[in-house]
Amino acid sequence: MKSDGLSEHKQMMVEEIKLEAESLKQQYDFFKHITTLTTGAFLVIVALWEVVFKNPSGKIFIALSLIFFSASLFCLVLVMKLFSVVLEKIWMWNFFSDTDNVKKDYKYFRGKTKIYNWVSSICFWLGIVSLLIFAMIEIF
Image 1 (cartoon, rainbow, N blue to C red):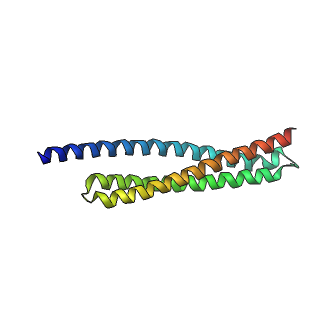
Image 2: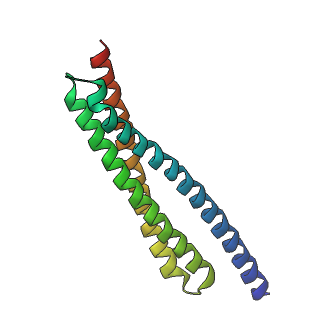
Image 3: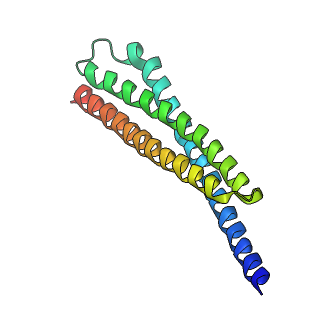
């Protein structure tokens, strides 16, 4: 009787692991897209800096935008690296019997990814806002 309950519990854990792994893969793909957008924005700013604006009055906002986009890229790379660690922990959780330590490690790394995720998102939006403020100053 106990073995049936245990196998049912194990089956539920496996389903939970699969769902978490799929969620992480989708988030990873999202971060790849944001990384591409951030890199593109950074390169466009640098490439068009001297061509479009000969003597811009809002230089500080371009500098802030570049700093925020750089910080966002840095955090995104860290998040993507941490996701690979989290996926490894999920794999270990699935195949090893010492699930308590693996779960503890998983929660630690998952917490770190959430922090860097928020920081990268905030920096990305601050970079866009800085760029918009610069554009508004130059247009008006």
